[in-house]
Length: 322
Image 1 (cartoon, rainbow, N blue to C red):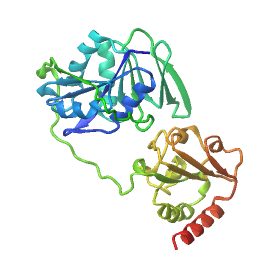
Image 2 (image 1 turned 30 degrees about the vertical axis):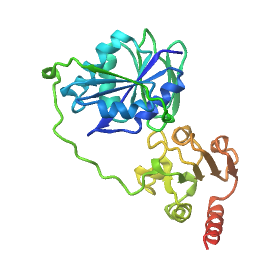
Image 3 (image 1 turned 30 degrees about the horizontal axis):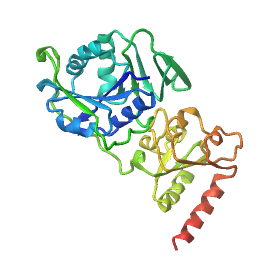
Image 4 (image 1 turned 180 degrees about the horizontal axis):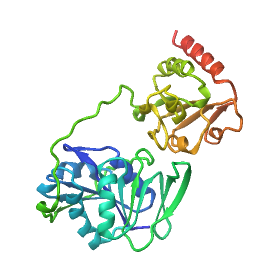
């Protein structure tokens, strides 16, 4: 496939959202030409940054694009998309673009939108996999009709595009926008508090599942996490029990992670959790149920009582560290 795949860049305050590079990685995985589309009052710095990871950058400039508004971005992108007919347009799902711009842009282009995709493919059109029915089933959906097809992608579901020594071409265009028709404007931003632990950045993650059984056992996993220099995380049942904060949850209704080492303690391996960790480099699973689905994904598995294994790991790591 040689068609262009447009990836709408997410940014604020002149700072690029690094997860935009995951969209470019998804475009490359589809076999298309990875085109970054950046809208801003002054897109030049962002365009230069994106050019190292994209095959091409389209920089759309207009004063009305100084802050994100769905109407402004749609006015800038839709006419160009109608003219050039890219194969697909991708956006991040969990922020402004996917939630606000995606539906509006799909409506103006008279095309469908596959939302919150954990995987993408191409079969004479865009194919997306997403969780449905309270995230209990995995649905495969195919875009119908003529391109451009559209999808929003779950953060962390795709590997970021690697930087190249040969930067992609940058095309600078002046967007045609009726500023009076935008309907609203941004007055400011208030930053939400961020916890000390960011599991999406951790290279080692120890995860407690339903099998930990109680708050005390989950808390005891913190020592193992500390000895490994990693982060503690959980599955949804642990959060629902109140043993862990929601910010530590991995899975379709939590966060997606790609650590170098994932250690699952008492994790059953339900698909809702697996979609958030299956791209980990090395997966270690400890579960007393030999039929637990997590073993299908594990590089190393132990059918054992997690409390016993946890204690032995902590003791051996203490010895190693003196």
